Amino acid sequence: MIKRSKNRGFTLIEMLVAVGVFAIAAVVSLGALLNIADMERKSEALRAVNDNINFSLEMMMREIRAGRAYNLSSGVFSFINNEGITIYYRLNNNRIERSNDGINYKSITSPELVVNNLDFTLRGANANDGLQPMVIISIKGTAGLEKQNTKTNLNLQTTVTQRRLDS
Figure 1: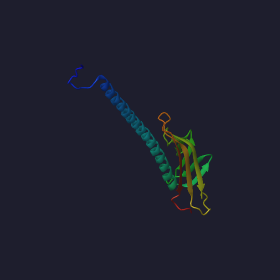
Figure 2 (figure 1 turned 60 degrees about the horizontal axis):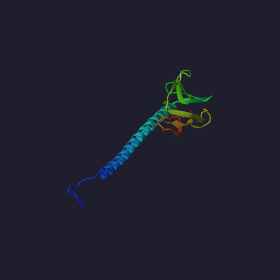
Figure 3 (figure 1 turned 90 degrees about the vertical axis):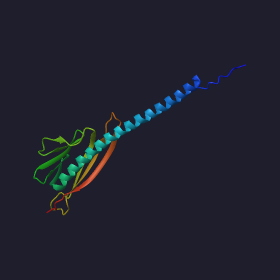
Figure 4 (figure 1 turned 135 degrees about the vertical axis):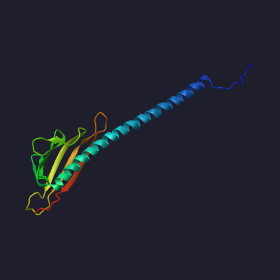
């Protein structure tokens, strides 16, 4: 006859199964948390690049809107700002650059933004054409960091109309 113990408890097999299930749940939860943290980091990097291109484009638009005597020559867009200084914009080494003397250029875009194409289209730039001067700015590029796998393509276009009336 087999004697049964009145002490009830968990067997070794039951304990191993319970610990195994708990370990699997912990690993899955940890993986999800790491994935969320990685996605947040990528999102923050893209937001920073987006803020940079928006700031650069807004600065260009503000200056161009108040400017006059728009000119486009050899990929360099120039105009005279409201203080009488000639401002130059160009694309160089995948960066948008600005100069106020035509010689010393400074990048206005961050290294995380690779600008593949910067195009200025002038309309109504001649004084006697009867059209209000306007500039169409088109930017094509890639934003984000390769190592963080946050690269995304961007295509931006905006139209800036000269504030002062053509005379």
